[in-house]
Amino acid sequence: MVAAAAASATLAREDLLEIYRRMRLARRFEETVNELYLQGRIPSTLHLAIGQEAPAVGVLQQLEPGDTVFSTHRPHAHALAHGVSPHAMMAELMAKATGTCKGKGGSMHIGDFTQGFVPAIAIVGGNVPIAAGAALAAKLQGSKGVTICFFGDGAANEGAWHEGLNIAAIWQLPVVFVCENNLYAASTPFHEAFKVPSVAHRAGAYGMPGVVVDGNDVLAVHDAAAEAIARARRGEGPTLLECMTYRLCGHSRSDPRTYRTKEEEAAWQERDPLPAFAAYLREEEVANPEELLAIEAGVEQLIADAIAFADASPAPESQDLYQDVYAGD
Image (cartoon, rainbow, N blue to C red; front, top):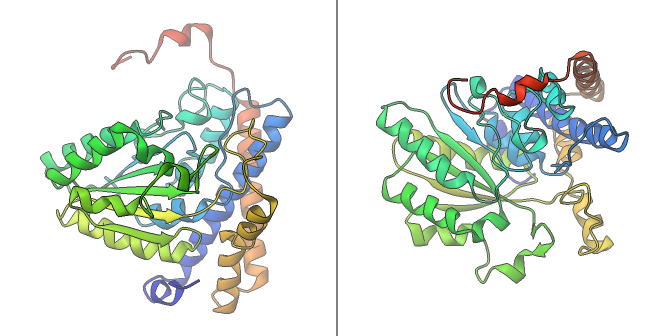
């Protein structure tokens, strides 16, 4: 972990352990809901973030009350990293009335306004101009709130993406655009869709900083995000942060991953961010194996409790279909 030494100098032991707990929670939540889907207990498809936990936790672990997060069709890790209830998330996935969106949104619309986590926007690139609007609102209100907007490399070829970055730069909006570049826009390889070497390379065209970071090194992500967030909070405008990562699963439940080689997948499996960070914590004597096992046991219990909560929750009533359609409902 290249940037670990620099980051560990500013993070307390409790912070480092919480980073591991959130990463572990995101991983086990995804693995568990995948199993539940195969059992027929989750009715809608899933876009899992297995392998992409470091950008979510590295960025969001350091936000403050009043900050706002915009996610994508792959929102579970983002939501958990930001503190959205796993109980309400599990209920949402099972289409229960106690879910984050009362069982109406499903996986691709997880959100909790009380946590500053806008219900996820599944349209690729569609969240970018809306995030710019939220950042404009924060600026006009004179708050110190920062907006975080996640997207994948595929979104960077959508027109709305360019429009959102352009206006954010012109108006110096307090927003950090976080690209989780997992090398594939669904099944399209990055090198077939971009002439430039990175998404961040485009930042200069809009007059904002562009930073590329190892997206499997959670502390490297933390450091890069800390600088971008501080810059936004000072009123100095947006940053484009590109986290190079890899999803250790298909794009969605229907993806057989035939466009990737077994050798490529094996190479990225060796760079799995979760065991890498666990190894760092042991090597730096932040935690011993027993302490990490205790964290993992706590995560397992939390997920079991979330499943029990969802199972015991009622389904929405038919009349609920007409609620929440308009503002004020």
